Each structure stands twice: as structure tokens, then as C-alpha cells.
Image 1 (cartoon, rainbow, N blue to C red):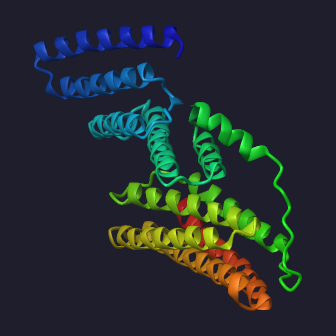
Image 2: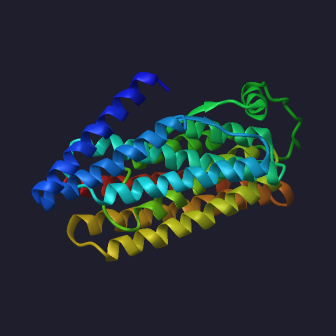
Length: 320
């Protein structure tokens, strides 16, 4: 955290306090109210910088992770309250939305790390969460566990012999994963719509995406039981995102309604993709290898349908 940034911010806080006192003394209630909201936002930004800004140092002890998560959640809630008092045309609003996104991603990462440690899950999964957090602007300052997760992430995997009768073209799985990431990169670019449901949609989507990617990792390693568990969790959260998108659609009309309707269909299809991958995993374990391959091929086709819904949604958004 550059000290100059903090010094400049402290100066802005003091100057804003002086302007607020002057406006209050003049009886200019509108200006005083705006400056009070601006002051609250600046003080929250100062807390954000003093807490490390976009850098995140997360401990490896569960109790300490809980404490760090509670502080991040409190900071996020304070920022959200401060933003409510600012007009939509405030010149620095975009900067604070970026900060809001970073803090939210930090909360998601701490929660995911807590789950990995508490449930004694694979380090490769923590590596995935690290990558997702970094993609959302978080700078992870690695702990001992995170160093190990990063090493595990880039360590060559041992190739296990597979049963001869199970012949799955894993390029199909790669296609599913690639299409998935391309589709969701579009959704990430459309963050923070203007309805009360946006945060829940994004939260459900992030959790679903994390579990789907973890499921793909298990699947390509031949660990089908782990894959089934991850795909099932992903399907549940895709369904939750769909239901919330439907609520958002019902609260809006015109192009916004079209946007959320198609996002809901998009999530529905990705729930079906997850279920198809569960079917393929189960067939790989106990059933017919040909049916396992067929289920993957169906998943690829469904991913293409989901992409169509996503394009319709984004087209509606561009026309707003």
C-alpha cells in the first residue's frame, strides 16, 4: 500500500470535513448531505487501503480465517451503505464499484479457503480459488498453504492407467470447460446490474462456477466420485441463480426483463450441463462407457445452447 495514497486520502478527508462544516453553517442542506455521504465513502476507502487494499493475506488457521472474513464482510457492508448515499452520476463511482468487487472477491476467497481446510479438500481446489480471486483483481499474498497449492497447481499430474473398455475423448471435456469459461467471462464483464437481486445472482454464479470447474478437474483425473459431488453442488447453485434471475426479470420491464429472462435460461441450461456431467461420471464408474461418452457430447451441445441465451441477454443489455 503506497503511503502517498493514504496521505492524499487523509488530506481529502480533512478538506471534505471543512467543506461539510461550511455547507452546514450556510444552511445548504443538499450540499451538506452530499458532502456527508462523500466523507463516509472516503473514510471507508481509507479503511480499505489500511487493510491492505486489493492485497489479501489470509491465515491458514480456521478461527483466524473466520475473523478475517468477518472484518472483510463488515468493510463490504460499510462500503455498500456509503455508496447508497451517492448519486449515480458521481464521478468516482466506477472506482468504488471496483473496490466493492475486490472486497466481495476477497470474501468469496476466504470463505472458499475455509471450506477447503475444514473439509480437508484437495490443494488443487484451493489453487483454483486463488486463480479466480486473482482474475477478479485480488492480489493473494501467499501463506504456507497457498504456496503449496500453487506448487500443486503447476505440478505435472501422474497418468493413471484406465480401463480399456472406457474410451472417453477428453477433448470433449476440454471443450465443455473452454466454452464454459468463455460464456462466463461475458457475464463477468456485465457485473452489477441495477436490481436488488444482482448480488445474490453473482454470488450463486461464482459458487456454481467454482464447483463446476472443480468437477471438471476431478473428472479429467478419473476421480468420478469427487466429480459427481462437485457437479451436483454446481447444479444446485445454477438453479439458485436461475430462480433469482427470474425474480429480477419480474421486477423489470422492457429490455431489462429480456436480459434477466435469458440469463435465467442460461443458468437453467448450465444446470442441465452439470447434470449431464454427473451422468457421465456415474456411467464411467458403474455403467456403460458409450453412455458416458454420449453424456459428455450432450453436455457440449447444451453449452452451445447456453451460449445462445447469453448472447441474447447481452444483446438486450446493449440496446438499453
